[in-house]
Length: 300
Image (cartoon, rainbow, N blue to C red; front, side, top):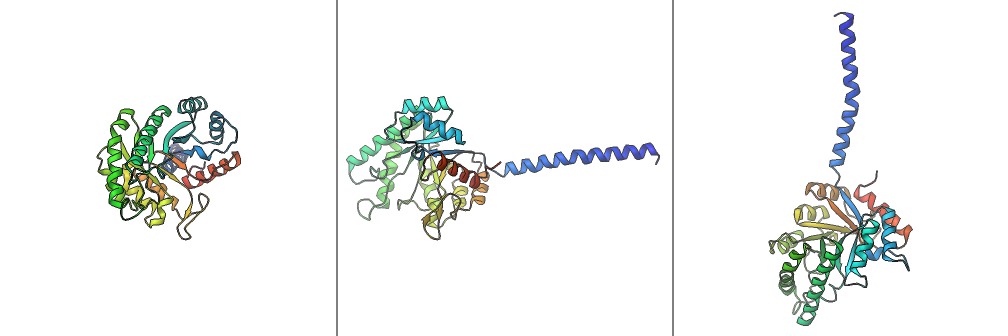
C-alpha cells in the first residue's frame, strides 16, 4: 500500500468517525424523545388564585409561567364568551369544561327532578365548551349512595340514560363527553370503565382518567392507561400516597410516573396533562409547574 492509499484511508476513517458522533447523538436524542409522551401542561381555573384579577390577567399569569391551557367549570360565575375572548387574546387554550355540580346534582339521584336539573347542567356544559372552543366536558356520571334507591345498578342505568340523551347535542356541537370516576363507589376498575364507555359505541364518549385518585383501588395507573387505550381522552393528576391514603404534593405520591409516561407513549397519547391541586398566586403556580415538569418528563 503506497502513501497516497494510506492517506486516503485515514481521511475516510476520520470522516466516518466525525459523522458517527453527531449521527449517534441524533439517534439517541430521537430515541429519548420517542420515549416521552408529547404533553401540554394545564391547570384547573379554580387554581389561579389572583384576588381581584380579571380573567385576562389570570390567563396572562399562567401563560407567563409556562402553562398552555386551562379547564373551566360549568355552571360558574364566569361569562363564557368573555373568557373565550380573553383566552384568545392572551394565547391560552381552554381545552375542557368540568361540570361543577355533578356531586350534589347527580344523574343518579332517585329524584327525577334532580336528574332533570343534572341533565340541564350537562347540556349547558356542552354549550359552554363549544363557546370556549373546548374539546371535552368532564362528567362524573353518578354516585353510589346506598343499596336501595341509588345503588350500583341504578346509578349505571340512570347515568347511561342521561349520557345517551345528551349524545346528539354533544355530536352536534363537536364536544366529547369524558367520563371520570373518582371515589364515587361506582366504577373502581379499568375493566368496569371500559364496559361503561363501550356501551355507547360512539367516539363522542370516552374516559377522563385521574392518575392519582384511582390508586386507592389497587390497580396501577399505568395499567388503567394501557387498558383504556384510545378511550382515554384526557388525564389529570394530583399527588396521592396509596400507603398512607393521604394527599401529598405532586411527585411525592406513590404514582409510578416513569411507568405512566411509558404507558402514555404506548397508547399514542399526545395532549393535555392537567393538574388538580390547591392553587394560589404566582409563586405557588410556579411551584406546581415545576412539579409537573418533573413527573411528566418535561424538563429540558
